[in-house]
Image 1 (cartoon, rainbow, N blue to C red):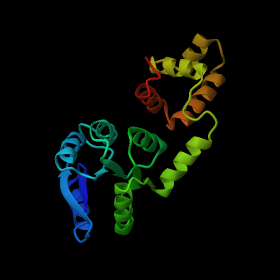
Image 2 (cartoon, rainbow, N blue to C red; image 1 turned 30 degrees about the vertical axis):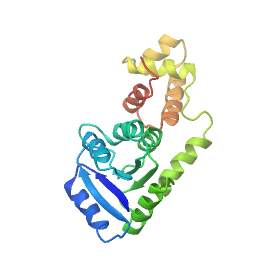
Image 3 (cartoon, one colour; image 1 turned 45 degrees about the horizontal axis):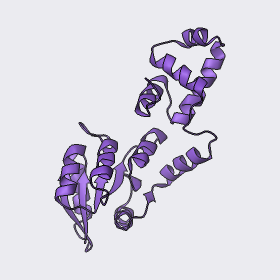
Length: 206
């Protein structure tokens, strides 16, 4: 019997997932939690095999909770179940130790197969997530910033405009824009604020 814990801050979602697994003979929902910290505690107390983990929750989010479970209870398999599939959501979750990543539009049969696969230690990824990961692997220098790109990102984090950054680095403003686009691509983000946030998360900024 696969012991499953559901972690999601929406009671209706938790109830729907509980009902989804109610008639399965090999999966039993042993608990529900509304945030990451509660999910960690429940997963350990209930000797869960698999945790269905939402990403964005108040308090401790899904990525932090996944990383904590990886360290505190490595035998527990975390399967992300979320509505978000951008690269900036997917990669941190996989890096934190999630064994799988599904979207909430998955049909019940797909969800059941994913839980069974996760319990066996097999990775399960939604097609769009697989595309993000393939793109990350294929992209030259993906995820790794050059020294100049780090300088640009640090200046932006410090509040510099493109013009200010260009002046500080003795290069043209167009070069700053090019560097920023490369930074966005490598970090999997779309704007300056997200780039700075991701830079701090990856400890690229001081």
